[in-house]
Amino acid sequence: METLAVSLGEKSYNIYIKEGILADLAAYSGVADKWFILTDENLDRLYGTALAAALEGLPYAKFVLPPGETSKSFHMVETIIDAMLAAGLTRHSAIIAFGGGVVGDLAGFCASIYMRGIRYLQIPTTLLAQVDSSVGGKTGINVSQGKNMAGTFYQPQVVLIDTGLLATLPQREFTAGLGEVIKYGLIYDYQLLQSIKNNFVRFYNLDFAALNSLIRQCCQIKASIVGQDETERDLRKILNFGHTIGHAIETLTHYQRYLHGEAVLIGMHYESLLAKKMNLISEAYSQEIADLIGRTNISADLTDFSLTSLVEQMRTDKKNQDGILSFILPTGLGRVTEYTLTPQQTLALLSR
Ligand code: GLY
Image (cartoon, rainbow, N blue to C red; front, side, top):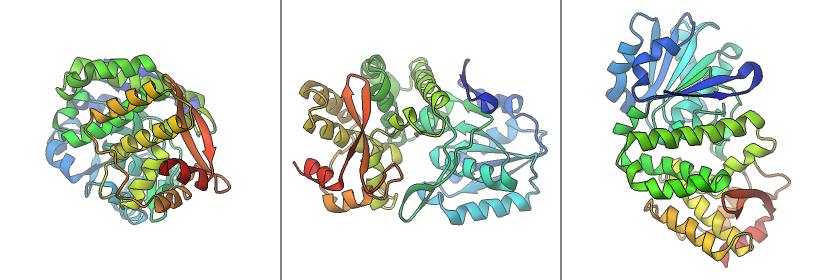
């Protein structure tokens, strides 16, 4: 088993990575008067019995969500909070987030506001959640104006990563997770990027040795970044590479057309092209990025969008200030820097 620490003073916690760790859940669940499992319908069908067995003898209630990003709404938060009250949860209870980014973000948000805050555990079930969203305490829900516009920074008490759960992950979800994996290589570690290229087929073939190592490396990067900048004042912003364009296309398509990681792949492709047009990276590196993203078979095509509405949507991004758009752009091998562009400059560069 791999154990990593997220060092945040009193809010520090561990990430445990092991195939099959779900069965040991009771050993990591801490002390609570009741646990509240939040999961979705697909996962409940696949793992409801295994979860029940893992919690046997402990008092718990369960809430099952419809799958998909549209569950990340104020309406759903209200429904969940009502269910938590009806289940008799107290300040000494804890939520178990068993799912991907949607479940994790919602569970964290509900935990942060229920009776002014209760504990929660993350058991991420998708590759994307295992390498990114379950670590670092970002919680959030979407509103019509944009993604994650309401949320909190609220750290879990533990993250349990059971890589065995990836065996039932649909290939499309797996590709979406690889989007965030590739992001780590591009923002922080060019050697990791090379290793992703070399092991690409092993990942898709669910070679668990390769996957465990990959997930550990990604979580190590995430833990290090979050440990230095929990609330995204500075360094943590680099994790937003691909997200300025990515969030805009997710919002414009009402969260129905792309998975988050797919939108990030498309966002990274176009934000790398912006960097090339601004002469921040070489033609060769730009091509290397495009080739790797291309290997996921994502259709990186913005032609369905009016560039004006895309840029208009980017203006609502919470990373912006004074109407100026914030982009994290590649500036070298495994390196990125924040740049700001006016909407007009962005439109001109995207149109070229
Ligand atoms: N997913 C980006 C972050 O946690 O900051």
